[in-house]
Image 1: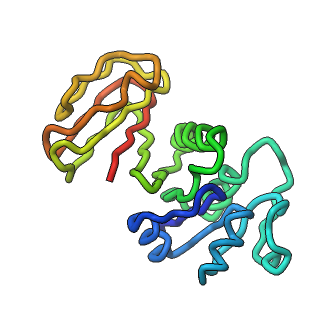
Image 2 (image 1 turned 120 degrees about the vertical axis):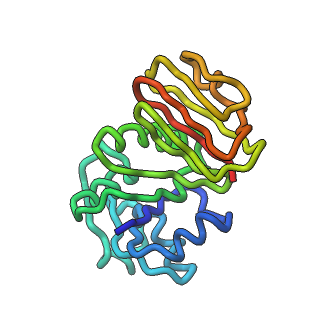
Length: 197
C-alpha cells in the first residue's frame, strides 16, 4: 500500500500532488497539517506529532510522539514504517519557511538509508532520493532536471544536456535538462534528483 504524508508547509495547489492526496489509500498528517486537510473535506488516517498545533477537535486521531529529536515529518514517516508501509509520497513539506524546506528535503536521503521509498512532491516538481543510480523515463525533451549531491562520486549520465561530473556544491548540479525521454544517472553514493512537471 502506498501512503501519503501531508506535512505542515504550504498546502499543495498543483494538480499532481492534489490528485495524489485525493487518491491516497492512507493519509497521515503532521499535526498542524491536519487542520487544513480536514477543513478542505479530508479525513486523515492518522495525525502524528507532539500535538502542539492541532485543533483539539481532532485529537482522537492523534498518535502523540513527544520526543523532540525528530521533526513531525520524520515522526509521520516512521509511524508508517511501523505499520509496514515503506512506499510514501510526501506532500506539503516545502514553502512557508526555507529552513524547514531545506531540512525536509535533506531528510529524503535519511529515509532512503532506512529502506523507505519516498518521493517528495511540491507544486513545481518531484524530488527523488537515489543511491548509486537513477533511471527516469517518460520525460519530455527539454524538461528541467537538477541533481543534488550528498557525498556521491564517479558521476556519469546519459540523456542530459550537460554531462555530470563529480561536484560538491548543490548549485553545480542544477539547471540541467533532458535531451531524451530517458535519463540515466550512475554514481557511487547518495544524490537527489529533482524533476519539474
